[in-house]
Image (tube, rainbow, N blue to C red):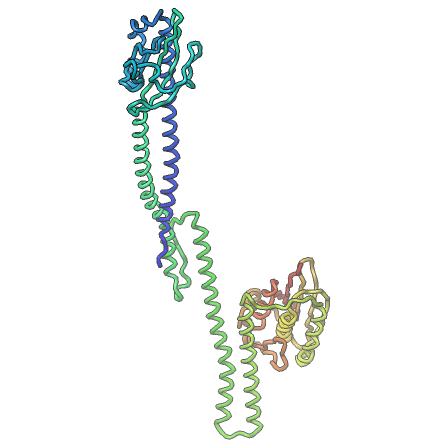
Length: 486
């Protein structure tokens, strides 16, 4: 099943973000415009009401209102949305302008428009200052929204007239509706355009990823040396390219290591098999005595033991690389264990005319069997390459953060270029060197299979420690470093 497009998903997210921004900005602009229009209309209504009341207060009587109607209505002239009604002290309409039946309705009894026909509005007293708080809202007979002020005006003769200054808000509603529609249209068009452009830009931005995928597809078993090379890779992807190239380098090294290991294993296993086959062919070439057949069987048995040790070592290394390898950790005295191991190898050392000496003591937390196997492999290796009459020293010491176990033997120094590689599987500094006889090497000794030091390194890695070799004119030292368990 094909996964969703990252470019499409990002474009949708970008479109949703753009839509949210447009909605917020559009709402802000719409509300700001509505408030600004309302504030301007309120100011027009208040100023018109104040002016009209001031003009009415200069009149002498109700008849003067009718006589000077043009003077009063001049307040709302020039603005078709503004309307005015003036009522005499008896409550009858004296003047009207631009109301078109939208404000007051005729009194059904008298047939004339009166104050009673007005909507329920708060009347501003003649002595009270007119403010925006006095503006009321209602709906006219024809459904138009109206905003206005109803105020009294004291005439010179002491009578009180009433004035209604109102504004029809239909044009404002229509203006806001059109503005809202334009914002909506612009927002939808903007979102669609943003999604389209975002998709194209994101696809262009993701091109380095497609180039990386194309480069990675060129890596095959026969071309593990291929590396991902993307020109002008963005800085955000440099770490990814570096990590992928590092991974490919590790894969190449691991594959080469596995290939060498397989070839070395096949070569080392072929040697004893060839020896057994050759000896058998020679023995079968003509009749032999019983002693000769017994010698052949003994030789073949030694080769079988060598194959068994090699297979067991390979299996151990395979198990040691598994993350769930079980270790039985316990605390013991490294000095005492070195003494036991030296006693076990005492006969082999005597046969090789080599002396063993143990020194030091330290408490170490490790798997006892693995500890013995690691030290035994180092000791067997030391006996193998120590000249006759030499002395091998096994030492244990502790520091603040680790326990060090050292196996030191005299002999020809190992060149520096070989010190790190001697822990590789089947790696030998000098394949022509003599081997230690395999008889009696239990406890994990591998004889000359070329896996002993590799097993030592695997054991130390299982314990979270390390092993390294030092070699100079004085001799060669292998140092095991076990971390202290807090």
